[in-house]
Amino acid sequence: MPGHIKTFILIFAALLTLLSNSTVWAQPVHMPRYAGSPYDLINAVNALRAAYGLPPYSVNSILMVTAQNQADFMAVTGNVTHSGPGGISFTDRLLAAGYPLAGDLSAGGFRAENITSGNESMPASAAINGWMGDAPHQNTMLSPNLTEIGAGVAVLNGRVYYVIDCALPTTSNVPQASTQIAGSASAVPAVEAEVIYPVILSTPNSEGDVIHEVQSGQTLWQIAISYEVKIDDIKRLNNLFDDSIYPGNKLLIKKEVASTVLPSTESVTPALTATPIPSATSIPTLIQTVTQMPLSSVSSTPKNNNRVMISVTAIIALALLGGVFFTWLGSSRDDNPG
Image (cartoon, rainbow, N blue to C red):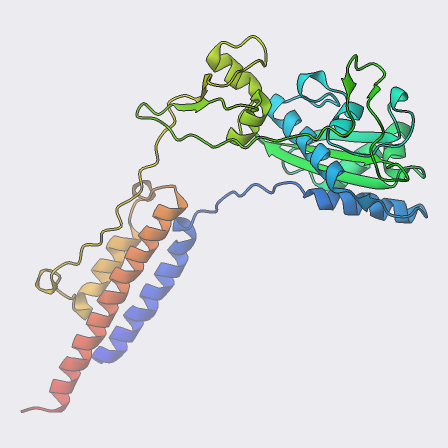
């Protein structure tokens, strides 16, 4: 058989072998499908209202904040609750955020809140369908008296938390005067704004521990949200019996965090004289060696799998090119004798 035909047969066989094994090396990566956004909730609610002949809710920025804060609070505590930090009621939360809530504030005002939780892959539509299961939750979404909405979504530890806050503002759009809220046992000025103090994340120390120094105005639940851990975990690590923390307190957030060792980016270029190019007759042996590589020698991480595939492809390509070159060189000499 002529040398160039044999070479092309070997090239074709090598490519088929490489393609058949690539599905083994390129392991699929599981990417969790996180739940919908706050606006997915709002759009679903307004679509439902349209189906019932009701006007859509208007999005209110203050309600967006109160709903998101409650979703975050539920995530870090692991509890599905209408009570906020320190047991603050829903009405109190709206007033503290500066929302101009209409109605008799001593009776709670004109407002309604829906909350739920599920697996992180739970879509917004599933939350809406669940809320349609009873009259109180339906009324939050289909009330003819409420006009504004805000929504919040939080995902933590494989679970998603959904919140919608719906309310009716005053006609003047100005908060009512301070009042005593029924059942809250506290007077909250309606114009008092809810302040979120920023939390600057600490990096692991030499022992791998993450320690946060509490700053003025920071709360335990805000710190937990920022570090994406649960309040109970922080309390357990620091032997706290309640949520009371004070400026200057040093809280252990995470213990012995494993540091990530990045692979070296330095590339080693072998000397050309130390890397002989294989001839066409050695290609079958090379292909057999590569295709019989045990899977146990391949890391299960996607990045390492990609490196293995790139290395193998480079070796085979180099071998094929070398074989073609020397075959062509030999045939040229045979066709043109000196």
